[in-house]
Image (tube, rainbow, N blue to C red; front, side):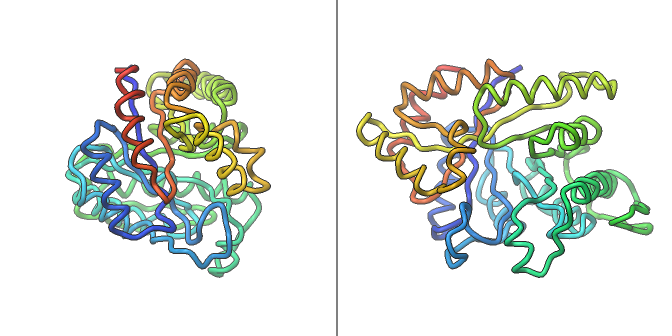
Length: 311
């Protein structure tokens, strides 16, 4: 399996033009994947007053601004939009991208966003049930002439979605690391699975659990793509790298201990070893997650010194 590289752009705390410059760079620099997230506020949360562009509209612009990379969202929160309405938007975005769209779906977690926007935040088991219903509705609307689905949480009756995506089968992803429900949902319904901010050791463990679910569900292991997002906090020299590490830990606050293992710290030389560990653990793509301000020197160094090692 070919090893690929991605860029995940959190569309927060920067101008639209800065984002577009980053997308165009990634599209031409040899990356294979380019994605956004689905949030209303900055993450990690500060006060909600920073800029954070809405996801469906910004993903449409991303699709129009690029021509080579696969594009998508990691991941759409299924609580924020009815899955049939989301499917309609996705079919349009695939047309805009000329058939380059891949779609991540997740059960949602950011309770503050739910509360502030007046969206019910049920227990995780309910949200997992909703995710299973949502992915089936989205898949059907993107592939079938009409869709009728009578779920506990979502219902559609003879719903149509035209025009269809340009791709005959638009890839759907499930995001998250829950071993009892999320990974099972990925095996049952998705083309790919993504997890964010975990160490290579944790990724290896989750990947083995995913294999076990494939065996239980009778699915060929190689038909499910596995990828990881890692925070990008690299610098070109050791002193700057340590300062950037401390900035990251301060930025994430109480969450730093949980996510520290899933961040790229240090120099570009150290990044080669770390990225290789993810590939050895079973990832087919390593995606660097960027937040403004973007360090162009480190990013160009990553392209020049890390990507060629694995190609």
